[in-house]
Amino acid sequence: MPRANRYYTPGHIWHITHRCHKKDYLLKFEKDRKLWIKWLFEAKKRYKVSVLNYIVTSNHVHLLICDNTPARSIPIFMQLIQGRTAQEYNNRKRRNGAYWEDRYHATAIGTDEHLQHCMVYIHMNMVRAGMVDHPIKWEESGYYEIANPKQRYSIIDYKTLLDVLGYESIDQLQSVQAEWVQEALTKDIQKREPKWTESIAVGDEDFIEKIRLELNIKPSPGRITQSEDSFTLAEGDFPYPYDDNIVSKTSF
Image (cartoon, rainbow, N blue to C red; front, side, top):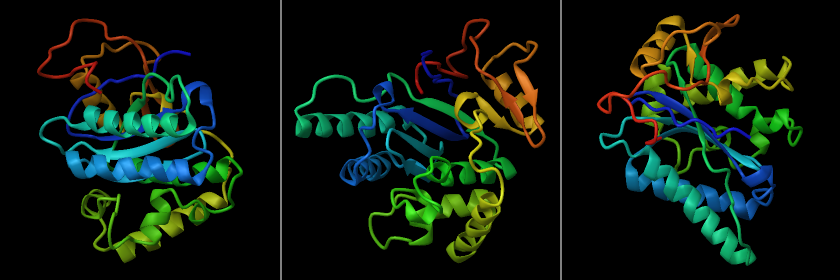
């Protein structure tokens, strides 16, 4: 399996996915999913990272985060969550060996309707997997938390999420996300969309061009593709040396 990307340029919203080693079902029990969420809460509190959405499945996780940290905290944020989760799990199970695939994958998401679509894609993960018939039935998720806001230990950064989506209240957000999911339930929800988890960026044409320039990626045939509702910047190697003031391939 090719190693997942860590392309990074600051100041964007990122959809991060990370699978358990060899796609093993190391998160199949609620106790283990709650463990990951415990460390997600600790990491977002410690490093001030804005979490906009998340879901913990049986063998992988999704995170939607806003890179509004001044010190580029996302790499150490991820290191804390994944490292402590793996350590506690292996100690409890008296298990040796890797817990996660060696790299997580990060996709930059445009802050227009593409952000809404990515939110829904994350919400519908366990419905697509056939585990539940509605996202509200999977508690280890952003959909469940938004529908049932916590007084303490909240993961979601509601203020940032409302700002980027353009809504004024949590009540309004709850209403529209219910509408998004109801619409998704009437469509082909079994269809997986690789662009959300395998590309460098998803958004409109201007956003894709902005990311391409920031990452110093040379235009090439097939690198940028257009679908019915979005443009996608595909994976690939950087064609020439980095400017460390612009991008760091190893930092994300």
